[in-house]
Amino acid sequence: MALTPPFPHPCIGQALRSHPNELHCGDQLGWWTRPDRLRLALADGLGHGHEAEVAASAAIAQVAAMPDHHLEDIFLACDQALRDTRGAALAIVDIHPQLDRLRHAAVGNIRSVIAHSGLIRRLSSARGIVGAGYRDLRAESFTITVGDWLTLFTDGIQESAKVLNGLDDATVSDQLAEQLIERWADGHDDAGILIYRHA
Image 1 (cartoon, rainbow, N blue to C red):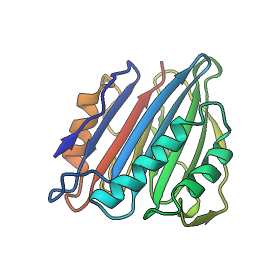
Image 2 (cartoon, rainbow, N blue to C red; image 1 turned 120 degrees about the vertical axis):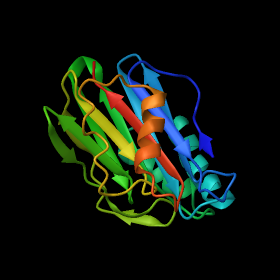
Image 3 (cartoon, one colour; image 1 turned 45 degrees about the vertical axis):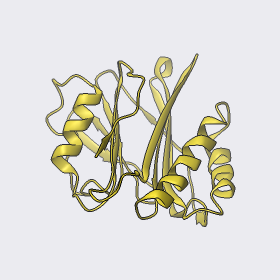
Image 4 (cartoon, rainbow, N blue to C red; image 1 turned 90 degrees about the vertical axis):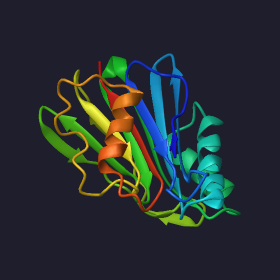
């Protein structure tokens, strides 16, 4: 079952797909705009089904409730907010378009990848579970230039997936995100993806 969030954005493509045997999706995402910044978040509740959806939704709700906080503070708040849930993996990215910079932090097995001039860079993630504790979280900053791609995807998409290959001439859209899930989802879990192209 494909679950695609509303509110299209000219630089963002987004798509969710639940486990083939579930109505609920344990992967959830969100994005928010501020005058100087765009924030993206992708959460993967442990397992799949209703309880996984509860955990992932709680993480996204907590991110949404802290629009002006630093990433490290948001992760601390999410860790507390998810204590009575299964917990989740979580990645958050702040993009500053006017500065051509992004700041990224993640816990767990969300994959975050930047494509720049044909080169692929995988961003790091701290060990642990949001809601059950984590360690060594480090928010890192990167330069991003016009035409660069950023993607966040959950482990329902193959780890070896080359999701950004061949996208140089593509137009970012929800349809493109759905096509990437169709191509790369492993069919054994929920799948979620956020793609961003810097303009």
